[in-house]
Image (cartoon, rainbow, N blue to C red; front, side, top):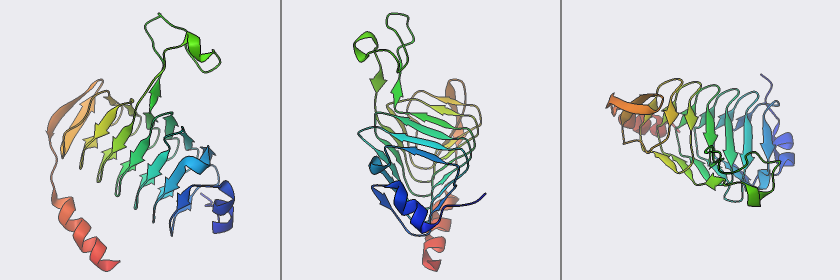
Length: 187
């Protein structure tokens, strides 16, 4: 996968970007002046990052795998060492599916009932392929989400979740915190 050069990254117009980032030339960014990307982070082919007024904030050592999307009016944050596997969808806005309102962005806002809210993906979170994260959600530190899961409620620190809707199945080990410290000593 070809990555953009620093000059090409500058031309996108991000709010902020760090050092040693890798961005596929096939990734797409909407409202890039509201997107910040930390050091040593990577965004792969066919990802879509569409920032609302609250922005998208990506920390250090974050990986967003191919075909993933971060979309919506609410703030989306991915803290250090977090990652999205392929085809993960993160939504900070959501239509009302009840039938009481019209849906989709082609309809005037007065006829829809879109809800928006922040999505916070804390440090050391990993989200499995094909999962969906809805607005107003926090995935706390160390959460692991299994493939094809629907996250519609907050997730507890160092817990593993799977399913639709996702449920906690067990605790996750914290060994990675010690490994993080050793890793940082090498920087």
